[in-house]
Length: 96
Image 1 (tube, one colour):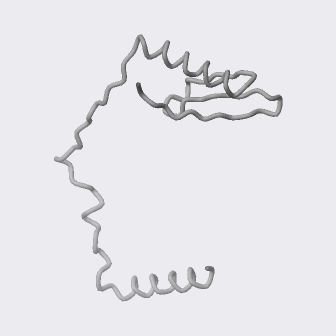
Image 2 (cartoon, one colour; image 1 turned 90 degrees about the horizontal axis):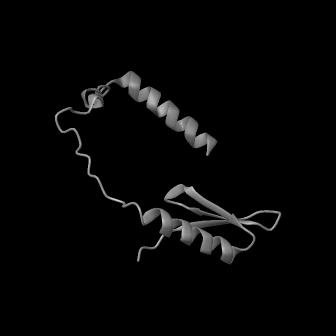
């Protein structure tokens, strides 16, 4: 048995909508909370009896380095940039 997280929403008209959080297209509406849970359980059971959920690993591209790394430390030792940073930090501190 697998557990699923279900979002239950009550409408102003008294209806309850149940949505499977991991599968948002799996949604039902019923007159009561209990009936909505039964209907969503039935829907999940029916749909998953003909399907399977698998985990598919996608390898990261190890060959391409992060293009932003070449800019790391570009302003190190730049007094003008240090002054800009100090000004920004002072303005942020004033606005907090």
